[in-house]
Length: 477
Length: 119
Image (tube, rainbow over the protein chains, first blue to last red):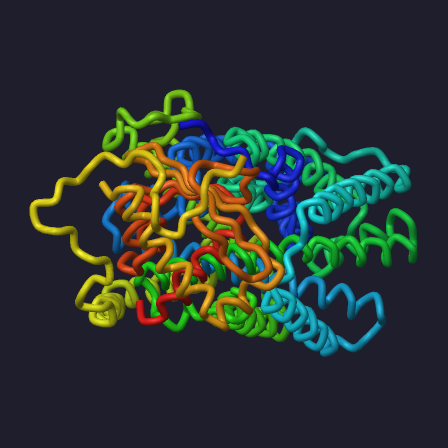
């Protein structure tokens, strides 16, 4: 049967903007600023490049898995087929934490940026966070979705604007680059590993575009889109790190809005306002993609019977309102805690560790499915899948460990503690609560089928020809 | 394998149930779509048109440019329209394959759920 041709389908341009836009959240600026302190002078771009090569490895894994399971439910499908369902669910729920973290981080960063440019007291950032998340939740509850065209404009505007600001800041500094090719000058090798772990986070969420696999014009648009997105992210993030390391002070790098200082270095007060606008624009994609992806996944999992039934409740606009409100509330709590404790670097490190963890899991799935589903058609096949898969498990596993015990340039197990709590809660739910949820779901189903039984002895014929008397319409001309 | 008559009979029952459901009608406001159904075991195709908050009759064959395409076995289609099957379960296990936007997928699933609220 031929592949369906849809009236409204996503083209390559939108696949690229979706993949890039989801990765290029406001948190990107903080992660870039955090990465800069690990390496010497203006050489952070090297760590971004190494992380980009690792992102290409992850791209290969997701490309192969998405080709085998081109559906929004792909993560459930390939994990269920690769490992025990309880393990798969535990990992999936823990991974979903990343979405809460990214939404919370974006709300915090945009709120802080607005508060800073308006010259308000620091507590007003909390007020802006509440406003931003309330608007995002209300828009989602009303079923408002950013159209593909708007998303394209927003993403490419953010990328171009960031490139212009970063370039202008370097050029207007009139100073030569310092150690652009010597990342280890005055640093240890472990610093570079930590920089790479953080660098992987700069690309994180590029793979979320795989949830759009059902709406692309051509299946290959997903993996091509991801590949182009990785290239774009490398170019822009490398430039941002060079620019930040070149013109920002240590104090500015450690602030909650280093991109505003970059804007000011480039074009003075106008640049500051301009970057505040760009920061707000990044939130458009994060809130749009994050809320939709997470709430629909929770809805589908509840409908499947793996989460409590109330999570599948719909409002009159067919929006799963409980997950949307829950996601907004969880993000609000995290964002306010971060704002009050100034612990955004913990958020960055936790996100980096979770992302590296999911890449290691994807690598595991590729290796296992090569054995379990060896004959399955793979529209996209990563070269030397088993060897690279094994390498991916080791490398991303190591990066996950490194990222989970480092905050800033110090040893700090706080991210590990956050992940352990999230993972522990997920495991507790799957092992102790889920059996009851599934039993309740089974009990709720009607004992008898509505479909009338076939008469005894009736043959099951091969379907052919149109019905004659069932209210069916004739074929359209 | 379900026959075309069985699928059409199930659909007629489901359509009646959906079109009589006020809540579902509200959910379908502004959602005019063409949906193609493809059976994976008998290579048959059907067309459903949703227009003005109402589901039209089952069209034989694939007509018009679709907004969504649903591929499943004929048995699954018949069970789905009778409300004996949870489409999300089949979707999450890869047995029902969809093509279309996430929003459209949600609406379609909402139609199957709200029509059989006790499911």
